Image (cartoon, rainbow, N blue to C red):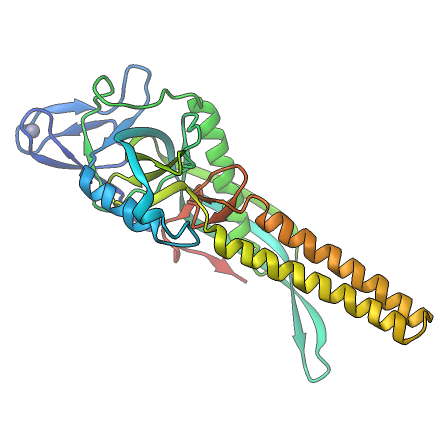
Length: 343
Ligand SMILES: [Zn+2]
């Protein structure tokens, strides 16, 4: 098997302060400067890594203020919002790096020739890729964060869970490992069957490389708008706003709802018009029924779209409101080009 790229973690040596690199998943690290050896595995046998908060408070607040004017948020949010609280919080995540291998046999449908004739071509795919699964290890409450991607410049520090604010780990190591392993196997099968219209055989395995409990830093910023409480979370290393709750731009939303109502009314009106013109014939009545069905569908669409119109949700937030922005997926593919074979 070809050698794969290593995922390196940089950390500051707790004895001499030198910058040490090690491969993720290692249990012991030797400092090349002072030759001290330190363990990364705790008493419970769990490999823990904590990443350093590098974004300063002012930077985090600036990012949230810029975020106030992005997207369909209340137009006066940047000028009216009052920041009430901002504090760093470390959230725990389980992170599994593993090679996922899958064999998938199935059929790809193609159209051929000038008659566009449908042909079924049997295929076999062998997938051999590296995947990273990460999932939050605590109850994140209303924070809207489910998983993380470690940025390249992330720097590990000694675990100091006495002096930082963090949430207790509630998802067990074994459960996280099983879910992570199954997700990686499923991803390998999905990658193999991407072009297949029918799969008649699939089998997948995963080969774990590192399984770590990661403590990752965020800034939690809470603010008020018109006497209601909202929040945003900022990645403590990249400074990106990863989730948040904000008041919506009620003006543009009521405009959209108004247009929806007008269109629906117009459709019904057209149906009635047809019914009158055709003097109640079957065609006219039919048009009226179709018009009313269409109007109900349109109103339903605008109702579900705008009934909670005054709240914007970003990140992996549950609840009522308009969802925008990106949610971090739990699976990442590390090396896209690795040894896949498609026959
Ligand atoms: Zn050292």
